[in-house]
Image 1 (cartoon, rainbow over the protein chains, first blue to last red):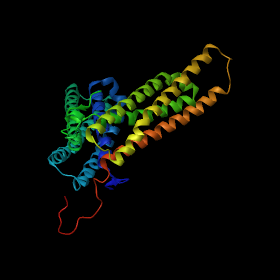
Image 2 (image 1 turned 90 degrees about the vertical axis):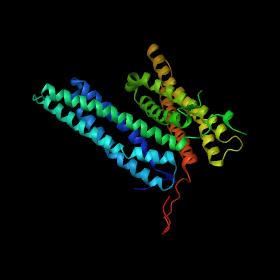
Image 3 (image 1 turned 120 degrees about the vertical axis):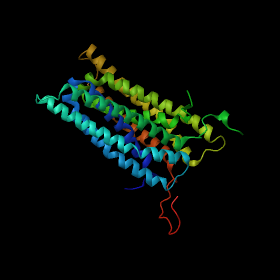
Image 4 (image 1 turned 180 degrees about the horizontal axis):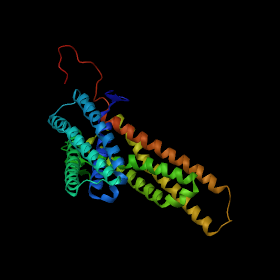
Length: 160
Length: 169
């Protein structure tokens, strides 16, 4: 994978795909888990978005590892450590999206899961989706901090 | 206008609104410029997006001026000057886009009120002008974003293989 595009590192660009798509996929999982009427219509779309989002996570982490050769600092290391966990959240989300898609398929073909199983899948899906959103926010914020922390934001804070 | 959010400068966050909304509003404006049926259906939505896009470019410019003044109180580096000169004119392009969308919708309104009256050429000319303005606005924002990314990231990665025996940093 190229490390730079047009002379600037690719990581701060490609992370946007994960920052947008993973929470979007998680919101989709929430909706499909909580609104049975929309499940049959939207479960395949949600699964599709989740697959793309999960596939882009390694692109973000690998480009981040490449950038690690050029930048350093405590905040960078913390961001890298946090970033390495995102793939597990993405894979958990992908698993729930597959489960919800399968659940929707059973409902469409008039072989719905039992109430207990439906409830269990939905509850797990909601928890995983919420955790994925929180984690992406934390990783994104730690990345922003690694880049921008310490940047003066007002002229009055200047010492001279 | 606040200058920071959660301790970080606001500018690199709000620019995302401009970078997303201006091209989106431009595409929608081109669609309503060339397709009268979609103009009645998506006209209001397009106008709102164009207005939000214009507001985003203004917010980006204000926070950017702030950031530059805070980071470079004495002399602004050449690369940042490049970005500034693009960013200073971006609001005008976004406002022209909003003006174009407004003109399209007003002309439609006028033609519905007074059918059969007015130049037959005017709608076509206006559509062509608006399409050009939309393209120009998109290119302008792309350049502003690119020079901004360069100002922040250029030179961060020095493309070279690590020397043998020298650990990569």
